[in-house]
Image 1 (tube, rainbow, N blue to C red):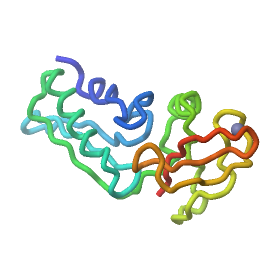
Image 2: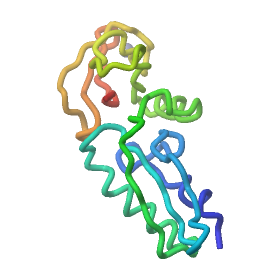
Image 3: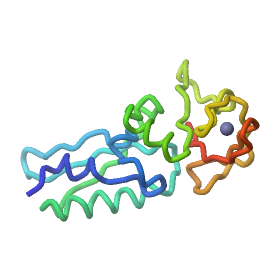
Length: 158
Ligand SMILES: [Zn+2]
């Protein structure tokens, strides 16, 4: 049997592929029920209604079945809400390398749309603009850099 935490942490985000759910901060906990020995995984979506969460739940169950825990349970919790602060340093580096701008910190914690100072992942310029609220997937928005004219995906913040 593979350690359930190791198996779940290796599951990649179905939309971004280069980053694991652990690096993205979606994975909150992997516990074993002391009474039944059943693995319980707790996840928090990056934003409410993200359709990728269904795929993530399926991928987690599949990874745990392969690891020898076919009866695992996946719980989704919405509080505390996912924050971009939960993206690990390694995760941020991978996002930048893939041309995806990680959302900035939300500051005072209120749900303010990230419209300022989204840096271009290619040239680092803050001279960027949102082209469309919907990028290549529902969880991303399409942005364009005014300095190098390159379009890029920006992860939606809450
Ligand atoms: Zn640029």
